[in-house]
Image (cartoon, rainbow, N blue to C red; front, side):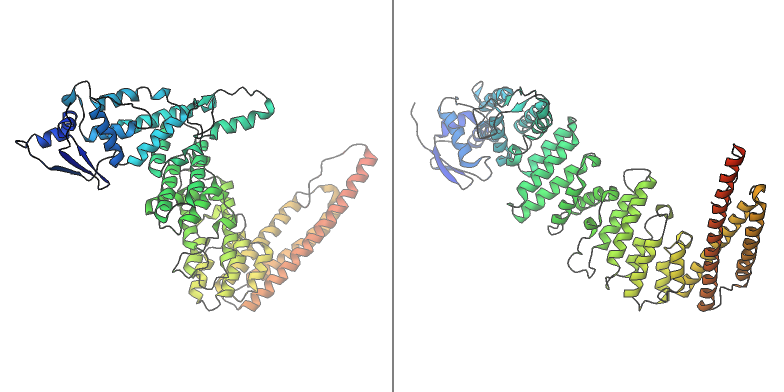
Amino acid sequence: MEICCDLEVDVNGEETFMVDKKIITSYSGRLSKLFGKTKGTTRNLKVIFHDFPGGAESFELMSRFCYNNGKTQISPYNICLLHCAAQFMEMNNSISGTHNLLEQTDKSLKEINYWTWSELLIALKQCQDLLPDVNSSVILQKCLDSLVGRLALTNEASPCPSTSSPDSSGFRFSCDTKSTESVKTSSSRATWWYEDLLILGPNLVEMLVKSMVERKFNHVIISRFLFYYHKSKFYTATSDEKRKIVETVIDKLYTLDWSSVSYKSLFGILRVSMSLNINKSSKNKLESMIGSQLDQATLDNLLVPSPYGINYLYDVNLVLRFLKAFLNGRSSQLSAIRLRKVASLMDLYMAEVAPDPCLKPSKFQAIAMALPDSARDSYDELYRAMDMYLEVHAGLPDEDKLKICCALNYEKLSAEICVHLSQNTKFPSKATVQGVVSQQYKLKSLLQGKSISQQDSDLSCTSIEIRSKGKKDETSEQVVLYAGKLDVISDNERLKAHLQGMQWRVMELEKVCRKMQTQMAKIMKSRVSSQGHSRSLPRLCS
């Protein structure tokens, strides 16, 4: 067969090939249609391809097929290049009948289940290098399906040594039956492929994880792979590659069951993402995942420095978004235990950010009031954080101070804190009055409770009851008298004096109770020893 080089082909500017137009055209529908419009024996023809898939290497493989009468050796090492070239050049049966390259590559793909693990990875890597040319091609999806199918077997089989052994069979069944090795073997079977799949780029990892989720893979295994992939690829990548890796990992973690995702690792992703300017969607997804499990966080997790351009020492806005995600998360109802954990964490956080002189009162107030009242059994820690904030921000107007104090539930303040509040000049006078009134109400309720308890006392200790009751009635009358005279409009000094007097009387009552309990114990002991049987006696003091 006479061969002439009458066609010049420029492939993507990489290399120029001189080929026989007749031979190439007989297998390519694309060139056949192009040259079908030309008439006569036109010489010095030139074709320029700007987007030939696989470049010069792929065109050379395709040309060898044409020059070899429609025959070539197809293997996992070149099937992607040949398949994409055949699609691009329209080398189907409408042009060359049974000797068409597209049909031969499709036939070879049917043997994909017989490829070794290493051959499958090589084919996938080749597909990746050709993206997006093979994005819509069946070959990429078939390679991914085969890969995921093999990973599904890891509960029964463990692999031969990785890609360093291209001629390996890909899998070998484990014969280790020692019980001491069972946990280690199980972990190895579940994660052996992590290292091998580091050759894949973010686009293929995204497709891979989607396929794994659809096939009901263990979400814990998938999440660990994504964190491993991020950690292994991140530090050697360029800035753009880092951003793409982080966005891919976040987007895929978001599709999993969040309880299967390592909370500590999420904060690791958060810290590295802050300097990468990731897209808003990925950022919101990451914050939602972290916020929904805020009860698992520690104080150190939340102490994230503020972004550039904001004067706050720590990123308070970020914590507010976490709180919003926690309260409006996937769980329709939040348990009391989880709410209390987050409330305790917020109290610690506010104590940490309170000394920041740049922190605006509106931000401090927003954190203090973010959680419902039921989240706290005691407001003592919140009060201490407020006290610290008002000490640093002494110049705040009373209006701002009152807004901050609105977050306090005075009824849930301890007696000690109420005393401190009554003497605290940093707080506005209205807040001080509320604290005093709340404490007075507690004392009155306490005294009424003691009085009711004494009315139910046993008749056998009448003399003791009369003496103690007389003292309590007298004290109660005094407290009520003080309460009647209390005027909330009076100055703070009178309020402090009343409160201190009531505190002293409570201490006296406690002493009386302890004395009564001691006497009751002696009476019980003497009666049991003399009568030989016990009689139920009511408790005078609880």
